[in-house]
Image (tube, rainbow, N blue to C red; front, side, top):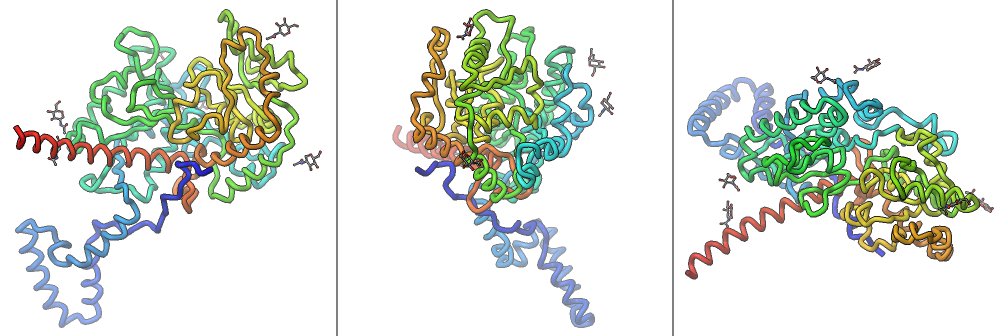
Length: 492
Ligand SMILES: *[C@@H]1O[C@H](CO)[C@@H](O)[C@H](O)[C@H]1NC(C)=O
Ligand SMILES: *[C@@H]1O[C@H](CO)[C@@H](O)[C@H](O)[C@H]1NC(C)=O
Ligand SMILES: *[C@@H]1O[C@H](CO)[C@@H](O)[C@H](O)[C@H]1NC(C)=O
Ligand SMILES: *[C@@H]1O[C@H](CO)[C@@H](O)[C@H](O)[C@H]1NC(C)=O
Ligand SMILES: *[C@@H]1O[C@H](CO)[C@@H](O)[C@H](O)[C@H]1NC(C)=O
Ligand SMILES: CC(=O)N[C@H]1CO[C@H](CO)[C@@H](O)[C@@H]1O
């Protein structure tokens, strides 16, 4: 079975030369040094022609060397069939500067891990060496789950389809680290929580290319969940900033780890895990490692109960898991530190289990879903919004091909999860696991500047191609509209 998202559509030829460089002029200069006297005259003439053309405001390379320009342009078009991306040069206080003031963060300071090492966090190779072979452990980092905005920005700066010429861009990227900006003020200091968002929306609306489409060919990555950026219509509501309530943001596409339902401008992207391969062979080695694992537990649960909530679902799962200690392995995050990644106990638990339970937490999504699948463990979902309606671009269209769904009401009514999972044959489990392993490239963030290549796409490639495709359709729709209006006018 071939996944639509895995189809090889994307070759990555060598980076084309900057089309803005007046190369032909350079080559005239080098000939000059070989034949000084003869070429001096020609140079003077050339300069006169040049002045003539410049004063007539004809673009120089096109006017003087039309064929050369075509030569430069052709590979550009071939390499980036969906168009190029212009990355705004936003004042650093809205991205890198937020990284430098990391200590102003939330009360637990674990966000700071997000900001070192270009968003990958410190290496976790030594720690993971206990359970993972050395050559695989090298690809592991203690990455913060909210680091996607930093990872995307760095990848885009090195992206082969980036352009420095806004005029030729098909998409505009706003490199605002909104999650970092907002994260500072989620727990305290509410008066400040909208300031950076207001400044950035004002800044971006001053850019000439904003008005070409009122922001609808612009996109941004938001490292935190939708609810941290939507204070609904109530300015006194005490959680989150109002970034996505601002009219300017209405038509900006957002890549976000948890999307709001019914807002088509939110595109769900996987949470960053700790695994960051440099090449497809790193991925294949990892896939091979998790495929042959001898799994000793039927299922596992990594999470904390909420003691302040009656009938807390996670509490019930934890209790069932502990009662079934022969088949379920529990990591109680109320007792163990689970939020920091690179923790060997989490990875070891997933590596040793056929299935992992993935209930909603404070919000519907969890990074743990991707930690689990990365270890070749099959996720068990209880809400569609945890994955099925979140990550359309990244996960298979047939949920049953890679996951199990259990109605949470059945669990609350005392139905045994062990019994349900034991209903799957070894062959069913093998097939589902194989699908999980097959889609691992779809949810890894590879090292910047490289990517997986040869048709293999990671989170970044899938998201960026998806955005460019979306903008292309938007442009086609818009010009289609124009034609219709024209015809309607003719008919009336
Ligand atoms: C953050 O705080 C720690 C401990 O207080 C300090 O050592 C570190 O230099 C601070 N970092 C920044 C970026 O201010
Ligand atoms: C609130 O933010 C301001 C400006 O960044 C800062 O000076 C002040 O110390 C903050 N207050 C608290 C309680 O964090
Ligand atoms: C952008 O918005 C302005 C004001 O709302 C409107 O006048 C203009 O037509 C819009 N432009 C495009 C390209 O949609
Ligand atoms: C898994 O277990 C089988 C039988 O116990 C053993 O032969 C095999 O080597 C084990 N595989 C790994 C990867 O440990
Ligand atoms: C787990 O076992 C305890 C003690 O036998 C029981 O009270 C509890 O209801 C069980 N939990 C679940 C979810 O079945
Ligand atoms: C072909 C055509 O007329 N396209 C128009 C569609 O609408 C946009 C914006 O409203 C115009 O810019 C296009 O020229």
